[in-house]
Length: 271
Ligand SMILES: Nc1ncnc2c1ncn2[C@@H]1O[C@H](COP(=O)(O)OP(=O)(O)OP(=O)(O)O)[C@@H](O)[C@H]1O
Ligand SMILES: [Mg+2]
Image (cartoon, rainbow, N blue to C red; front, side, top):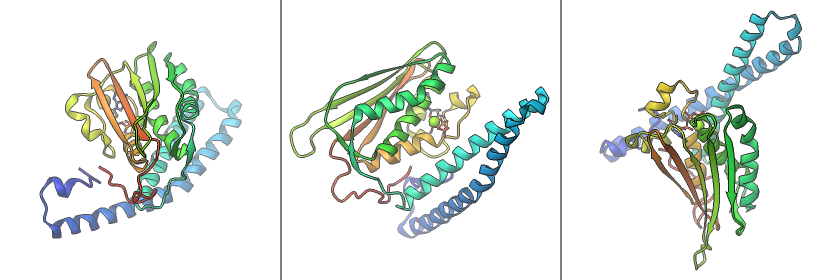
């Protein structure tokens, strides 16, 4: 169970063991951050030179073009993996503070749906947006967009062709200084998740057994990014899934943003 922060607690380690465990964890994080960082430059070269060759594609045989497609897809995947890993370790270090400002939730969800639509269309999947008006949310638009990109990307990836993915946004008012919550839902009718595997999917590199056997690509980093960014905003994520029928992810965010004392960019426990 690599990179699992909760390991020590789960295995009832004493204070001393926990300290060693934390050091070990920190060393792994550092190592991962350095490796990820160093991999970015050569990867960017591979991608740029691949684009140059593609520009000269007329001189390539059909087989050569197919090989180039494979190289480009692999390099893109690796670059995404490296960027995700880097981002997670920077959040862990507290080196990636939130850029807090009033966020228009309607615009946020519309931007996310718009961005996912071309890929969904390729799989004959329609994304339907159903959002109501409500107050601005104190948050980081760019990071929250990452949360939605990951959830909608998953919903599309794990759906069957000719189906619908629904994205909803509702404001729930409460009296008092918190001012209520926004609930953003991403709902699909795809492969679903085995019930006993749901909880561990928020850990890095975790993928459900049915996703692994389906041959669908993925590294298992998206949901850990979703969790950590949502929690940095003082929110939480809920999942309801029925195997073989579909999944609903809900992101619940307080309009007031991170609570006092929970400064943006502070260390957030990854599990
Ligand atoms: N909408 C969904 N329907 C079914 N399974 C899902 C859904 N969303 C997530 N999962 C399960 O949770 C796992 C973890 O999701 P996560 O987004 O972290 O990883 P990934 O999509 O496999 O890879 P990555 O996001 O890093 O490209 C998935 O591999 C899949 O097993
Ligand atoms: Mg994903």
